[in-house]
Length: 255
Image 1: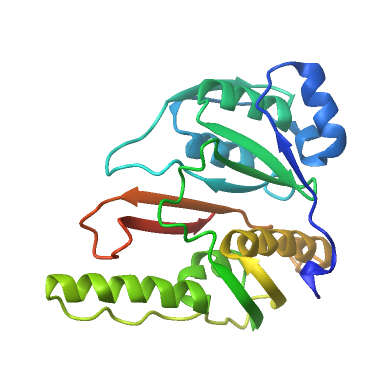
Image 2 (image 1 turned 60 degrees about the vertical axis):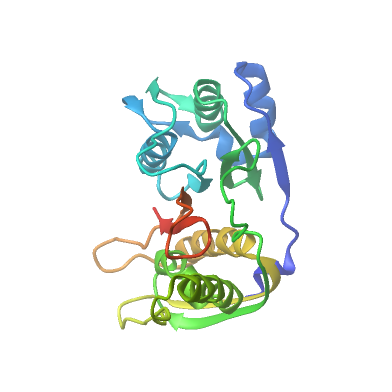
């Protein structure tokens, strides 16, 4: 499957609170029209609430989340929300009202991308690194692709190792160890992903979209279970003295 054969449609969605505006936007982005089951959370971070939101319908609420870069121990703003039969669009409007550092957009109308308004999620610009070609034909769950992106995207891995090695030389430390690679399991689905000329961010989005199609096209097992689509989360902890040489420590995680 050539995931890039179709044009990705991105709608930038301001964090508005009015129901009419949310309804209008939902017509263009079906994910925003999904009704959310009841949940309540208090004093939580944006990451916490998005995890809770996704857990209400992990098959259809797909998220790419870039957290505001922060120093160790910083948790950001606290959010309290009580949801009962509201749409994803209405929930997101309220979340962005409570933590106005964030905004959101949709990709192909089905993937919710949440990110800082001022793009302060990635000081090292790792998500913007260009990937000439990425191919994967293996038995693996899509979530593992997200978790192993740093070591299995050559351009990203090379850049990170270069910065790490430069930092080690400056400090007189041993050179960095090499990382692992994506492994396979006999019980995992067969994945075929082939991408060209994408950024790391776009690759993560494509893995989510692929996981959605895989879920829809794969019949359930004998127990009626299906591997759910994945979502992705990126976090950067600012630390000028970090071993990475990037001015901090990046983290990619599926959820």
